[in-house]
Length: 364
Image (cartoon, rainbow, N blue to C red; front, side):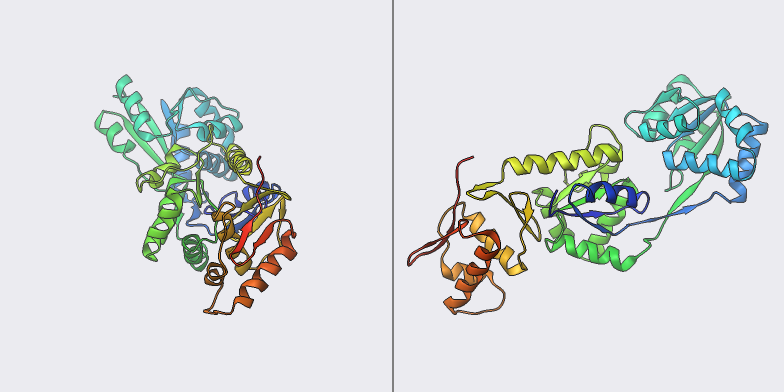
């Protein structure tokens, strides 16, 4: 991923994700679309947890891994973790997806059933099909709050206890968020990583609020800017806008990083072959034979023009047009080409007498 500029839109675990991408050569930018407000010290959460200990639930629905971990931390902070986990162990635990299951396992418990679609709708279908009348059902909600489970279970005759461990809040840095959507639309970003559906929706909404959504979506749809989602639920806001994101087979951050790496490894196999190695052009840099070339934005623009011709001749007039400003002096084109050769090697760009320049390509 040398030379790739990757935008992370999540605040949680951003350091871990950034480190994994940077180890593989990526340049990482942060622009969290939402913040997370913890309710670990919320009196209502603690009171509801104590009530569950006194009146154990028949079924416990865990909707998010971060929420369940926070719930356990809240119980521990108030000295009731041991009886709390003992009650859960005797209940039927239902998990909304693999991340929720992982958090349950980390607490030393076992999920009795997992909604592999990672949707609350699947949980509702299964539990309502089995019947919940007369049961006591505890629902740990995700950051966006109630998702309809409380209502449908109560209407079906269950006694429902709702627990909110955290909520989504405003972006921690609104300026960084605004700058990120403009950078994405302007071609400065190679990939945007989404790790939650609310975060994806918030980032896309920010692009719409800044009136740059058309440019962002166009780059997403042709994958000139790669959209990457950790799982099918996170992908929904993108898919609703006609975008098909890259997704790993398993909804894990590690799997997402591997999917990104695999994508760019494949991109390397279809890179332009030159006498001095494979050439790939990112949003703001060019990579030749695995090395990032020391080029200015003007140099990148000219190299991109030559690469687009796939070995065809590019006129001096076209080179001038790719440079900033409105110069008509042929010498400016010659200087730009000379600087490209200095950075990439004389073998890469050939002069075609009286016609212009071309990129020297070889067969794979």
